[in-house]
Image (cartoon, rainbow, N blue to C red; front, side):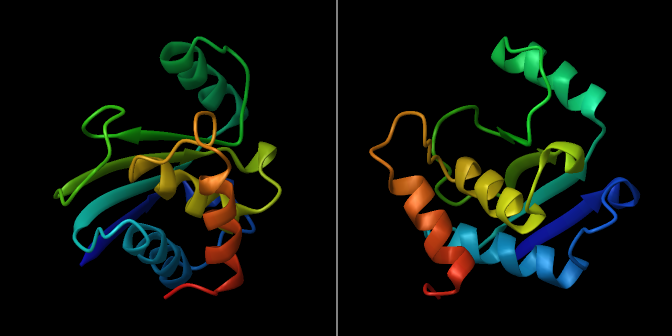
Length: 131
């Protein structure tokens, strides 16, 4: 079972309800064969995400979503703590997409190094074409 905690929901007036956030996390994790674990989804300000982006990626600017896998950049097989997804609603057009995007990064996918697989899977999952 994927356990999901949401923090800072008051910063995201259009945030999906917790049940939808959990469904999206479970869907994305299942696409990588992960069926058990814990993830934290946190909505943060533009300033906070810029700070995190600078500290962890060397890019001190606001962005839409950052993922912090527990095991660094290695793919997650089956782990209890999957990691954290940090989302800045001010820089995110679609919060559902950001949740799926962040979760796919936690499973080890990376759209900056793959051949388009991650973003294609993300589109597919958001269309509901995958179990």
